[in-house]
Length: 251
Image (cartoon, rainbow, N blue to C red; front, side):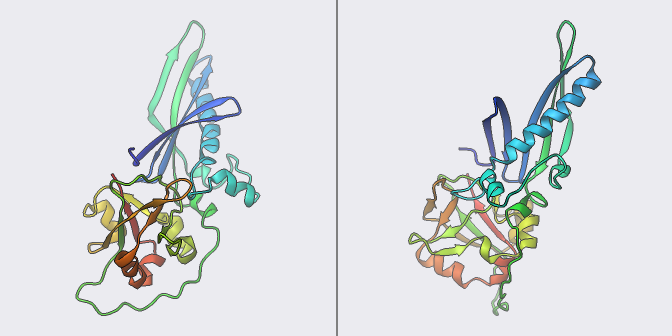
């Protein structure tokens, strides 16, 4: 399964919504369509439809192995509308605009894209965590981040995955991170290569790379690490985990 781009069809209230999630760049793209007497009216209607579809698609984003955003909104009594802060971060791709004409009307289709970090992720990471950060231990070259190698494993990308042991011990989750970094960067990054410039922005030039034993969860969002790997993660400078300098290496 290509976990960089996850395309889904969501059926909601009689509508079929196509969405594409780019977990590498943490964006979601949804299309909208509408008819109009002319191109201007058709495009205006398509934008309205795209925003409505975006709101519905965002409710289906996976938070962790058991929860999707719709569950979280019910739990926190949230009402998502077009005036919600993170919806205002969305942008329309004018290069995606397509028009078709029948006998009397124009139909327009347009794509809208929104980041999954920033305002949207504040819904997940809703409160600041106070974490005691240890001082950097003296080393020839300290680790700058953590990479969990999940290549060859079945993994479902999510907003707040965990790193756990096979017995359920938690090595890394949202309870031990700074809300600031979690909302700006996401709890983990999903990367294809360790040494490319985009990856290094998050994990630096000398990350600790650990091979995962597998994945777990109702949806396999969480990485399982045991033995020496778990001990190494536990001994990492907590500043690395607190600042979300963590990435999952995927196929």
